[in-house]
Image (cartoon, rainbow, N blue to C red):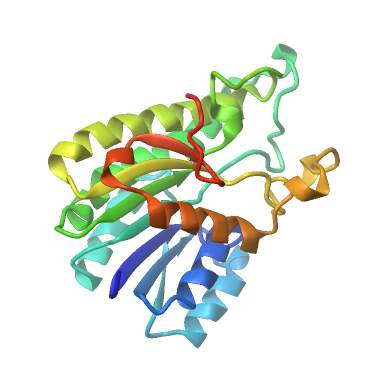
Length: 250
């Protein structure tokens, strides 16, 4: 689709940054809006915006803060009348204080809350405030990067309580969003996407037992996900897809 407008949430590194790089090379994408949280971790993204000032605009937002999401949406409304592609790439698996739980002994309520704030609630805030920019006559996509470990039906190993449950909550929120969007923004396809294990900072501590053929480069992951997005139909809204286009169980 020519003259497409894309918004990549969480674009400072990893998969989000990979989306920005590939969309910059896509002649059908007219404008990219890319968000980051801290400038000190977004130097590569900000450098790209200097090199592509007409095509790439960077915005600061913490999607766990609704006031910041509102401010971002209002700014976008001054810059464009529509969005054709929105991908939320923000996710938390570990940081300096949080590690995935291996057993119930490691459950920490504050850590669980942070998992849900980052991995679940952010997407529903985006859906709430970006609706006016998605409600137009052209086919458009609102996608969130989920994870296969968030599938309840596919959980055979246990562990990772906070990450698994927050991604499962994300899936339910996106499914519910899709039902409301059918009425309020009928040209929007709402989906969750599993990227596969990708060589990023998020997966770095957990790559040891991943077979080389199942550890994807960021470039490969983004290419695969864009192929899935390109093929989506309105009838597939509200579904959960893997990187190869196959549906995943809830």
